[in-house]
Image (cartoon, rainbow, N blue to C red; front, side, top):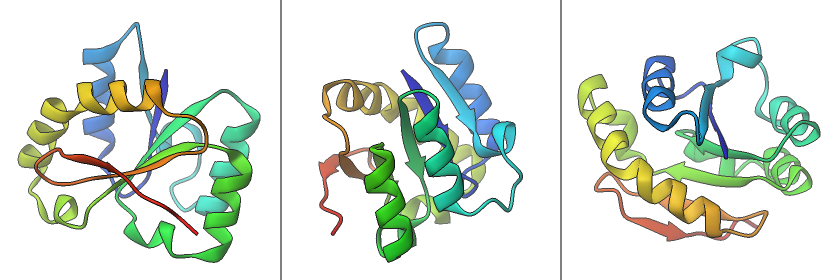
Length: 132
């Protein structure tokens, strides 16, 4: 399974997680495939043409922007939205929490039908969410 971290998350965390989950899975940061300022709808559409990706985003607004919602639904991705508290964490705290909850993210993503959406709380609890 391939996981894509958006620009709201540190590339170093994506690289670190990739080291932990390889070779069974892959974690890639947006900057590895696209320019840093690429619009969400552009990279979502492009990723849909490649392989099945699971998106991890710290952009809580993504679930509210109609154009991005449409792009996400058309692309058919499974997406995990991090609750706002994640973005308030210092780097090492965020890295530690990702290491702790990433196995559950992998498990949830592997069982999810596409497109699915989830929210991940700072304590690692994963819940299904609906994007309209």
